[in-house]
Image (cartoon, rainbow, N blue to C red; front, side):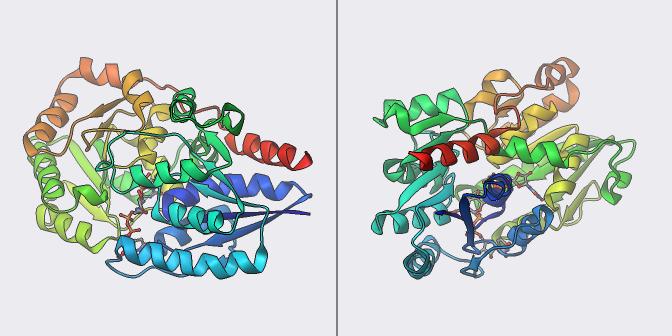
Length: 367
Ligand code: UD1
Ligand code: UDP
């Protein structure tokens, strides 16, 4: 029996890999092994619980204030012994985290084949997002199977010299997840608090934004909130202590914003669905919001996900206080601008990406 080891460690990887694991586990001729690195802890466990996925291995690497060295060293050390013991036929990683990079490199050092889910996203600027742009390039160099979410992602890989017969356009598995989470008539205490107000949903965590850029972003947002009586904001704060500190300092006394713990994925997707505007530096949220028809202001200067920008639902506004203030205010005050940005589109697939990936893996093992 062929053995596939799926490896991931953070919240977004879990949201996008659990649907793949569920599909792989339906294939009886494949033994699917789940290894989590625990690069995230609480935020990872939230997702595993929702999808009912129990890891076979957990490297439990997370520590407060972990550096890129810590993550890389611990993942490689842990993967070395697990791979030696299990010797899978294929290691499957996702996207661009340091978990994905270090796990793929470990497989490469042991001559084990690598599959890359969400392959081919690019900004071609290694400073943004940092270090993710490097991570996904590096995995791309050694991956044997590339599951690209869009035609553009496939084209990026071809332009870089990857062979066409190693690339499949599958759609993004995040849309598979979204199909199972959004509910009609969803109720939540935070939504009660926002009843009768326009709800703004906020997230921020990017490493390159930590410090002054993040403080600037929050100051710009706060100025707009202070000028609009009919708006309330919900901000599930990332557990990174640096993010917690800055958000508390800027928003701590503001009555229009609730700083809350990270929401589980069902809660978060349903709050997105109820939101008027989303402000974020997240990657995954840029993929989810367009299919819900929600305008997203992206707190970054550049994105590896241009499809939403081209479709008009996503706008890059950078991290400067004045720009954040102006663009956020415009979207609240200008109905025409709002209508332009609030059309539901589906650049990231039909919600069947995981089934496709499982089938491709199975077909490949047959030959
Ligand atoms: C990581 C990924 C990033 C991804 C993001 C998703 C890398 C280099 N970065 O960044 O690509 O977009 O996850 O959120 O791989 N923490 C907790 N509990 C948790 C999770 C985090 O306490 O469940 C705290 C810890 O103090 C940890 C810190 O957050 O040290 C930062 O976590 P880390 O994974 O290093 O960086 P992220 O910004 O989360
Ligand atoms: N998300 C969540 N709870 C939250 C905030 C976000 O479940 O409180 C989900 C969101 O729907 C998306 C993913 O987490 O699927 C995005 O994760 P994040 O922004 O941390 O990482 P990125 O996508 O930038 O790598």
